[in-house]
Amino acid sequence: MTATPMIRLQKFLAEAGIASRRASEQIIVEGRVEVNGEKVSELGRKIDPLHDHVKVDGKPLRAKRKIYLALNKPRGLVCSRSDEQGRATIYELLPKEWGHLHSVGRLDFNSEGLLFLTNDGELSLRLTHPRYGVHKKYIVTVEGRVSQAVLQALTRGVFHEGEHLKAEKARLVSASASQSVVELELAEGKYREVRRMFETQSLTVKKLQRVQIGKIKLGELRSGRWRTLTEAEIKSLLS
Image 1 (cartoon, rainbow, N blue to C red):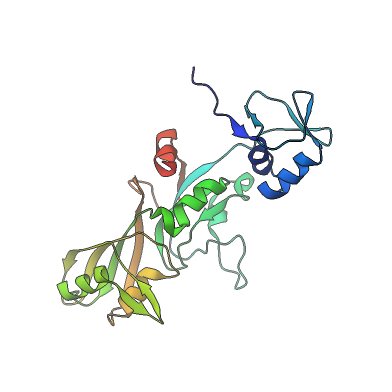
Image 2 (spheres, rainbow, N blue to C red):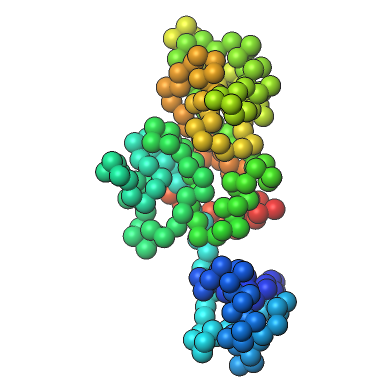
């Protein structure tokens, strides 16, 4: 059997929802935490989250079960839990008990495709912070014909309202006089980045679908449906 990874006590408290990691450190120093009946007041203590018994102010804690979902977001939904305009949200597609999950990044109202939801803050950080550079792949249908010059501009980088936007890869899938289909790969997730990139080239996006995040593909997951990520998929995102 594989041993359970040991984690720092303050991380365990934070993941159990007691307080932030910094505030959890203060709770430990104040001597309010017990591990297996022993009071702990020094930082640096590591515990086995599955087998050690932890109490705060005499009340037992349990590790919060981490949940990882992949959702094929349809067009016409927002990613927030509620909407001032009364529009439908992605949470209407999930069981009520998963209403506390947060989306990892967002897809705007008119965009569709692969979206993750989780209660794991570490995963959210790794997938959204630029320093990790997790690649995301999109299939974009654009009005009119996209030239090679446009693709080259997108991979060199363009400026929109003073912000630098850049695709890691850009490939023309098909093109006609009326519309083109482009595959884009991005390493950042700036606000409405794909649509803004094409705006700089005077091109209008008709359809925008995210089809891959890291190594995980949308695959055959139908629009509006969700599935849980496998252990191997979770490890690939955290590695």
